[in-house]
Amino acid sequence: MPLEIPSTQLNDGQSMPQVGLGVYKMDDDQAQVAVLAAIRAGYRHIDTAVLYHNETGVGRGVRDAIAEGLVTREDLFITTKVWNDMQSADNTRKSLQESLDRMQLEYVDLALAHWPAPQLGTYIECWQTLLEAKDRGLIRSAGVSNFFPEALDELEEATGQRPVCNQIEMHPCWSQAEQREDNARRGIVSVGWSPLGRGRQFEMSPIPELAEKYGKTPAQIVLRWHIELGNVVIPKTTNPSRMVENASIFDFALTPEETAAITALDSADGLQGGDPRTFTGV
Ligand code: NAD
Image (cartoon, rainbow, N blue to C red; front, top):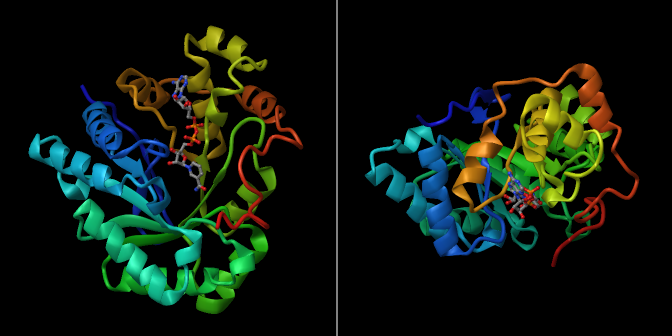
């Protein structure tokens, strides 16, 4: 039986499955196989980006799953992202159309501005163009990634509209209390990228002890911790049994004290990726 993965309501009326498959660093062939395996397991949410150079493979995996009769397009939630050097209005339009063409899709469920890259000065244009694409039916929801409060303020000042989600680096050593609270106050869902901390925190107490207590793996404890905080997660794996493992987190719960003990692993040097206020990636 495929897993049942619950969904979170978004502020525009759509909903997003709480566990999705991240496909960063997969090539097209790996992404095709992984997407089909994930959908077989019960996943409905796939997270890609132009930067990952695997949208063609993601689209193939989606078509394979539909051809197998596992799902219809409407059952799926496909996210892509506009890379930082493509965020002018014209380039955002071009980037979205190229993503759709590569995936052979008529729409994506969610498109994100990948980073604010404030030094490039184009994220407001990108946001305005994502909203235009939503009106044109090319994307169902518009969101952002790696945004900080002042940048979120500017989007709202420019358009009166808020992103449905802010996808940010989040794991026990970088638990993002302030940005999570800021997102929640605005009605924006926090989506955790590198939700497993790329596996580097599995030995940190109390994660192994809680794994022992609940008869779960350290990865499941970390992902359940995200769920207790209200996050959506997009763990990456090409391994079908780990896909099942990573989504089998809805049959137990951590106590508030256990959740707080994991959050206490937060560390000033826990950031593994770029600093959103300075990262441009170009
Ligand atoms: P992650 O925290 O998902 O860790 C992935 C690593 O953990 C892989 O090496 C994988 O083999 C291992 N792993 C997965 N499941 C496991 C399990 N059950 N047990 C043991 N090891 C396991 O890190 P990530 O790939 O950096 O992030 C996940 C996704 O987030 C990406 O694929 C991508 O979709 C997204 N992402 C977004 C941004 C952004 O700027 N928006 C940046 C990075 C990643």
